[in-house]
Amino acid sequence: MDNDKNFKPYIPAGQVTSEFTVTSVVTGILLAVVFGAANAYLGLRVGMTVSASIPAAVVSMGILRILMKRNSILESNMVQTIGSAGESLAAGAIFTMPVLFLWAKEGVSDSPSLLTVSLIALLGGLLGVLFMVPLRNALIVKEHGNLPYPEGTACAEVLLAGEEGGASAKAVFSGMGISALIKLVTDGFKIIPSTIAVPVRALKTEFSTEIYPALLGVGYICGARISSYLLAGGILGWFVLIPAIVSFGGDTILYPAQDSIAQMYAANGASAIWSSYVRYIGAGAVAAGGIISLVKSLPLIAATFSDTIKGFRENKSDGQNKMVRTQQDLDIRFVVISVIALIIAIAVFPDVPVSFLGALLIAVFGFFFSTVSSRMVGLVGGSNNPVSGMAIATLLFATMALKATGDSGVHGMTGAIAIGSIICIVAAMSGDTSQDLKTGYILGATPKRQQIGELIGATVSAVTIGGVLILLDSAWGFGTTELSAPQATLMKMIVEGVMNGNLPWALVFIGVFIAVVIEILGIPVLPVAIGLYLPLELSVPIMIGGLVRLAVSKRADNKDMESETGGGILFCSGLIAGEGLVGILLAVLAVLGVADAIDFSKTVSLGPAGGLAVLAAAALLTAGYSRTKNKQ
Image (cartoon, rainbow, N blue to C red; front, side, top):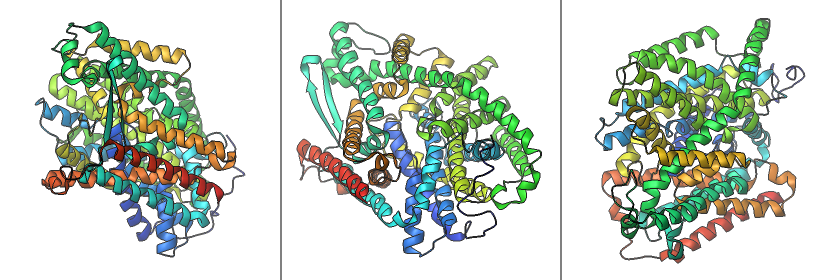
């Protein structure tokens, strides 16, 4: 607990340098919009997002140091602080809020307005930042030697390695350009198929892959281990469960389908079996995996609250330290008043479908999961933060509580989703804020200014994410091949199942059983469960990216591959951002009704061979950037 006493930040507390400037704020806002939109698109496609802190730090150095000739490291840190808020808010929002759009398409409720979506995102984002203010000293400062906060520490290393900013920024922008071009050619011009499927008739299934470089980038960043778990889930679903269902199902009509298994397979192939049955099995596995990860974290959760309370008691004697620049937080009175005002606003705003009971649940669960999220990302990193498990637990409790108090039907379901959305965003924002505050602690930033920056980033991103969700829903719709929205579909099933009792529980419990077996075998449940839940074509390119990372690591020394500044990781971050941005552009064209004007599929087509060539080229370029960086 005393590891902070001898720590010296890079910029001493007594040194004043540019930090919270117009340039850093405006640049940070732009990056928050870009990374928020890109990650929303990625998350709705594959159910996974990637941390934006390191790419934002690299881009900020490229803009401030190279283009604007400014060399304040704290200014660059402020840019990434604001910029990364967009990604974390998007990560929380896409897990739950698309449910409101899905219900609107089914005629269950009205389509949510931009104001409703933006308000839910804003309230969750602001609460996530504010809940972290009183926790900073206990978790970031007092636990400096015990909680590494991997992304926060890595981001500080990137900023400290300022002389590498030019090469690092080039890797990010190169990835963005290449991925944007491929996305435009496949989904804009449509001269290359985005998905390649090959029937495997002997097994009554099919093998398929998408050719998008962003998925390859996700696999590279996650690594071969996590990618292999995802693919294992896909293989279990498509090469074990689907063949078994088709072979033994025959003329059986199994709920929730209305046709026999043989009829569905004859009409639409393996995909019909996946959407009617395997998807529910996968949902049960994902739900069980989220709850298992949460239960396993209970000892850590208890320790977190105990340590936090001790930290509050110790802080009573640390008042004199608050005059030091590097120890200045937002005034606790402002924080408390703001939190109370936000909770009241949640209950009284007519555009936020949450009752007073729901607002109370948000206050309790919000602070609880904010503490849990911060501690979790401090130990295992943001990528392993069980946000979905927290959302599932919240939704189950909130839905049962609302139903027990008579708030059922459509109103109760929308209220439960709104509560889950806010809690999900709170958990994601708290984790991101913790990482950013860790970066600032190492560099010698002013916590108060960073916290203001986070609030700005959350506010701007909330408005952006509302527009992005409405745009994407208008262009393709959630729950479609283009935007499967896996987590949101799962949350919808949970709420409907509790409220109406119409969930195919037999299939769900098969998934739960599979998850328990996987846990007993000592294998991480969530990656396998997500692979089982997602279409196989998403897991295959992710696995290719993981294999590229594995091949590169075999040829590089340990120090190079452990560094989060590796060129391959930055290049892949660019791949993800580039595809996401062009995806938003194509959505705009689709909504405007002009997308067909650039569709050349009837005159030019490179076929499956062209798609495989594109995927192979992206893999080689990723490996090339990794080797180039490792040699520097």
